[in-house]
Length: 250
Image (cartoon, rainbow, N blue to C red; front, top):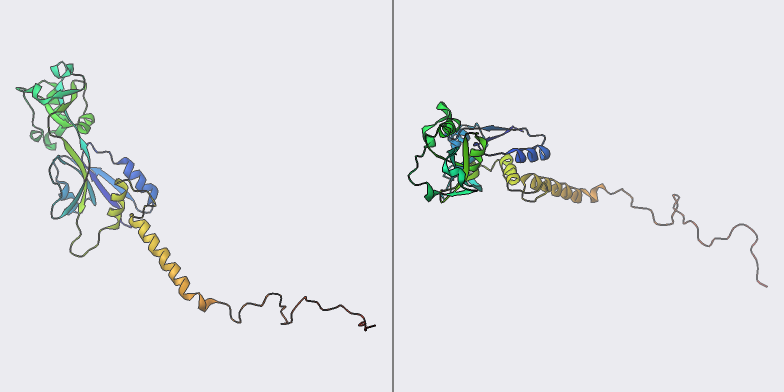
C-alpha cells in the first residue's frame, strides 16, 4: 500500500500518532514533514505532497471549505514574548492584555521564512524592539534565554486541527486517511469504527457465509455409522451367549 504522508505546522508533535500507526499498520509506511506557518496547508493537499495536514487557525474561524475536511483537535493558549528585564517578567503566570496598552508590537507576518521566520522575530524581541504574541507551543519551540514568555489573557487563542481533501464526486474516502483520523481521535485498535476492523469483520462474515453454503455438499457420503455398529454392518456386543451346549428345561 502507498506511503501515508503527513505534514504538520510548527508546534505540533505528531509522534504519538505516528507511533500508534506503525504499531498497528507496519505494512504501510508513514512519513511526516514540518511545513512553515507561511505555507498554505491546503496547497500541500491539492498538490499531493501530503495526504493529511495538521494546521493552525484562529479560534472561532471555520477552517473547512468546499474541498477540505478539517477536524478541530485542541486549543492553544497565546503567550506574550518580551525581552528580559521587561515588566512582563514581574507577573507570576499570566499577563492581562489590557496591562500592555501602549507597548510596541511585532507582526509575525513581517518575518516570513525567507528572512528567518519566527526565529528571527524572537531575536528581534530579545533586542527590546517590541513584544510578540505566539501560540504557546510555538513559543516553547523558539525559547531564548534573552526572552521571557507569559500566558496572555484577553487575547484571541488559536486551534490545531487535522485536514484532508474531500473525495471527488462519488469516490470513497481514502481508507488510510480514515484509519489515521481514527487514531488521532483516540479509537482503539479493535474499534468497530476503524476501517481496518470493518474490513476484517466483512472478510470474516463472508468466510462464515461460504462455509455455511458449502457445508451440506462437503458432508461425507454414506452417512455416519450407527453407534455400536461394526464395519461389517453387524451389531456388536449385546446379550449373545458365548460357546457351549444350550441348557434345556427341567
